[in-house]
Image (cartoon, rainbow, N blue to C red; front, side, top):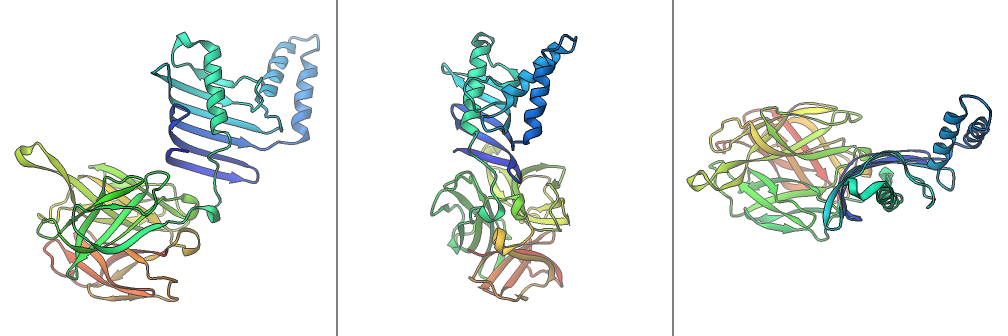
Length: 394
């Protein structure tokens, strides 16, 4: 199934919900929210029976009770469960895109029409066609996708540590089902440099590298991780455009996460017409359970940047559920970071530091690494400073 983004999901016993954007599924593009409610039990059947009996009594309430009983009956599935759908998108019909808006219950029994609020895309299609469209879409999304438990989440299968040059196109060993988040960290000749992934797709990404002189780097050691963040596993992340407002928020995590960021701006090209991405020095500051601020610096001019695209990850490290180990700490340039117990394999390390400082790992080991922290002029960072690192364990 083609899903461009999952916004959230949850599960309680046999009931669950999921919200996502579908792309070209059953000719539908748009938002889908699916809530599945388990069979309430005997009281549900009793309540519907009482409403049905009430509709037969010679009282002014007979009609509304009958309507309520009918709506309730039409809402149920064959096994007594309920499926609520919210659809907001468009569907292709007769080579024309028609808006589809619906909120309500859709039974899995073929003779029952949808019950809810609907806005037909084209008045000429009529009510019956609108019902048929919604019924068809609901049936298409009824069984898939469904929420996954943290233990069932797919492993992050794409990460690497190797030598690459700026502009290199990297392809994943296997494509993702939807576009992943890609974060990078790089060093050349033992000095941290600015790096970022652009043109990210389910198949791969293009790597950009920039040194302290603002030049493209023809060869550097690059560490990268491509993954799909999931709140249930303690991770958030996205690619966010910032313009003046430099604070990024997300649903609260159980504790203060480790935050790693990359960023690029769009600098003018020849004749101020062409524009292309350029990596920035990006740093997370004021990290909290549900937010952080990002500070961006041009590595050539050392000037703050207010308008850029930021790739970020906020992770509560847990190797068992999200394959990350890491911490927020204070460190110095050329310091050896160690931890115990050692990880199962030598990981890929992603690093961020304080504003104006580039950070990268050297000499990767299962139990640590050597850290390089350089300012916009390529000089070693002075004294102890903030360091945020994530180690991805394959």
